[in-house]
Length: 402
Image (cartoon, rainbow, N blue to C red):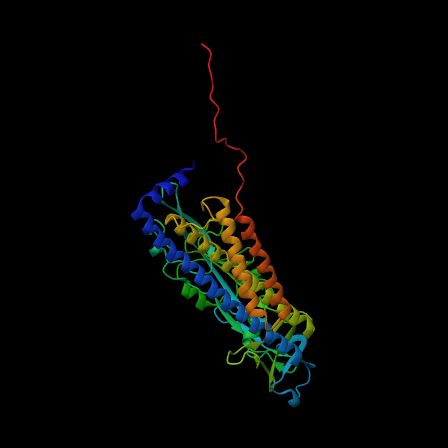
């Protein structure tokens, strides 16, 4: 007999302990199940609304040329593609570095500092591990368990910053900042020894006794770049270059704004699609639908696992109260887990089917049929194995010779 099974049997025989564990199990089991069911229902409803929104947008979108802003398209959902243009010079005044005709210019500052990792040993004591790494975010070492031996500076001498172009255009349309932010930095700004010698005096006055060097294509603030110390800084610059993009949004004068749909009723849902490269409106809506499916699939799977765990906890609580279900038996075996998973799958399929049946009857009915088919699993689970031995009612006497 397994040790866990033996302990469970002893707990079950103790009436008071069994009742206490039963109520605790019922509470957590119902909590897990209800949380998973409620969350899944809400997520599925949001996914249906999102699918309806994308379907409406796909039917209403208009293909236009980027070089022409027509008043007739005012307030309509439009699709346009082309290369982003900008005519500005962005400057980092602290380092006196400029970038011409870029969408954004970012100063990246990393500091060498301590990090703490906490793990649990086999004897349940906590183990603290400290490492030195380069990070952009400042770590508060006062929260460390061993803060005296592993101390980070309270502040960074120089922090990162982002400088954006004031006006970015896609043809004759002005791109809002939220779309520009979706464009990831395309490349690092190359630093040379010549640019290093142009570091202004105001930077030197800020650093005080700290030494600034040019090392491996970036600025280094510290005494020795080959032997970094806590508090040393690495400074680089990256920029977002103009690229070809595709956008689906609402035309408001010469700007692009999120388009509010009318499908979801009182719920405000918007369409604003953005992708790098040249894509048609059909491709962009297809990608958005696929992403909506993947998002709801991952969320539903997480809720499904929580629901299965909740059902299993409920079965254990019933077993402790000696009111176990006939088909379950001892929940410590694989059968208990399997029944919990199948039951969670049935409930999940029913929730998804009811959410989608109005929008897509085919999907809803198909999922309901699958859920009904899974119910037959319980019919086979109830069958117990027949005894292989036939016991005799009359045992013959045995005679012995002496």
